[in-house]
Length: 119
Image 1 (spheres, rainbow, N blue to C red):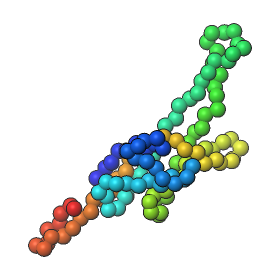
Image 2: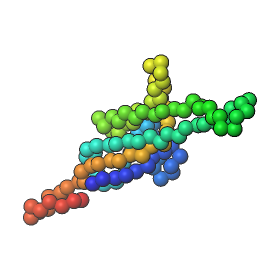
Image 3: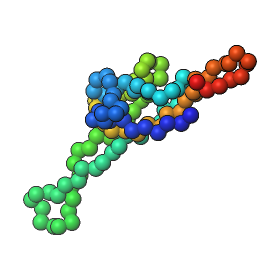
Image 4: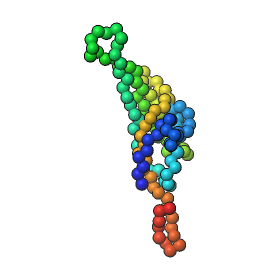
């Protein structure tokens, strides 16, 4: 079973619990065991025009967080540790919008006649 889900702090359908940079991933779909999670944080560059520069094609880059997500499947619910890494080796917990591809095993049951069924 493969799920492709988008999570965000502002998404009313999939709210994330926890605190800043340490979010809890609650999966409501019928999955017994999560086997893998691939996360892709959304990244957008904040480019702006310098006010005091005369050339029309001059663009300066602003400070943009580059999120890194570490998944901890040993906790219940699963914890996502979201960090911004900077060039000086410091880390800061941040929140971001991200996509998650979750692969898991659906619950299986054995019927009275020995058949295995998803359920």
